[in-house]
Structure formats: structure tokens, C-alpha cells
Length: 183
Image (tube, rainbow, N blue to C red; front, side, top):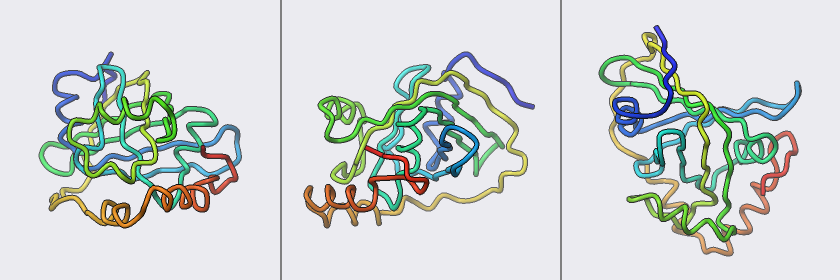
């Protein structure tokens, strides 16, 4: 049914790059705290950097669980599902780092995305060093039709100044739901 691969290459890379949505799972260290799973999307926001490195643009959102977990322990799993065509699930396990827009290295990371949606409301670039690449059947994943990206997040960000976004991060994204610091 499933297989482990040495890297992201060939058809796996094509599959990943064709998916309009992916899911990110992370958790705090230890037995307490909440496991988080976040859906992500928008064309141009995910990048296979090389056979063992991926990255995505992290836009401002209602929470910042993944960023807090990455800061604490770096563990992350990224999952892609085929909702059309042959069934398939691909998981990328690894260690991630979030580079906030205030970091001097942020502009270079952002420049690596060839065609991102409006990057004004990007709060960080998450880079993952992948240490396990696997697939599984996906036989129970439903068939669904992709109709397009939602533009609500881009519109939301376009109505805010840099100062507004800084205040938003301080107010809404300073800590995880478990109280872990984010930035």
C-alpha cells in the first residue's frame, strides 16, 4: 500500500506541486498541549526547494499554532491528498523553521517563490528539512472538484498597513492556545 522514498522527486514532486491544498500538523513537546492541523492553500504559496527541502508562505491568520510549535521543537508533517484522479496521500515529515518577515533573511526566502499571491500579508516563510517522504493509498479520500482559490485572505491583508499587521501579530499571534510564544 504505502512506500517510503529517499527524496521528493519525479512524479512525487509533480503530484505535490499540482495539489491546491495541503495540511500541516504540529504539536508541542511533552504529553500536554494541543495537536494542531491546519489546512493551507492558494497557488504559489508552496515550494519544493530541493529533493529534501520544502517551504511555504505563512500568511497572517487567526492563530499561530504551527509557528509556536516550530519554535519550540521544530517537528512538522505536511500532507497532500488527491481529491481528483487516482487516489494518493503523500506525507513529508521533518523539522521546520519559521523565518518572520522581520528577519534579515526573509526577503531572500520570499524571492524564492516564483509566483506568489500578493505577499503583503505574509508573516513568515516556513522552511522544512524533510527527513521522511512517504505515500499511502488514499482510497477513502473523497473525490472533489477544485473550483479556485479563495481571495479573502489576500483581500483582508490588502486592507491593512504594515503597522496594522504588526499590531495584529502582537494582539492575535503572540502566543499559541497553550501559551507558547510565537515570534
